Image (cartoon, rainbow, N blue to C red; front, top):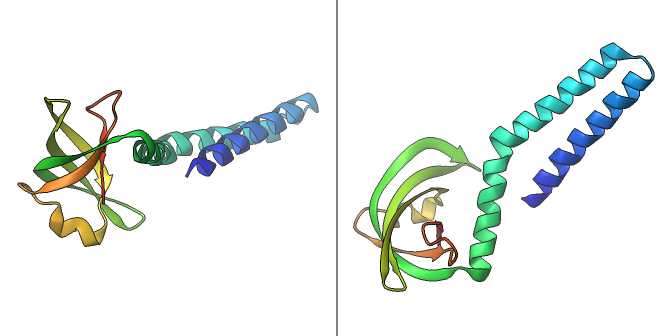
Length: 140
């Protein structure tokens, strides 16, 4: 998913350079259109794609360097949103790392095969960030 970040910002910079060239050649109307296009690209990336890209980067980092532990599911709430046709759920869990108990919440897409196992009172595997133990992702 990191390619989305690079593609979005490359397009943003191309639109800005193009707008600068149009200003240089005294085509102010077209330049305003290019600046508006650059603004649209930036807003769409920041509001739509950045959370997805950040979650994907976190999952990849925790798969490589995270601590694997068991967590108790305290509550599960539907967010009424979907990502790649998977329901995004808000899951509250409690887990113990290095003798210290943490309670935290994650908003994450849940595969349909795992929906039955994500129920309050059940245990689930999680990857926890060793640098910030309140940051974690559910492991499916």
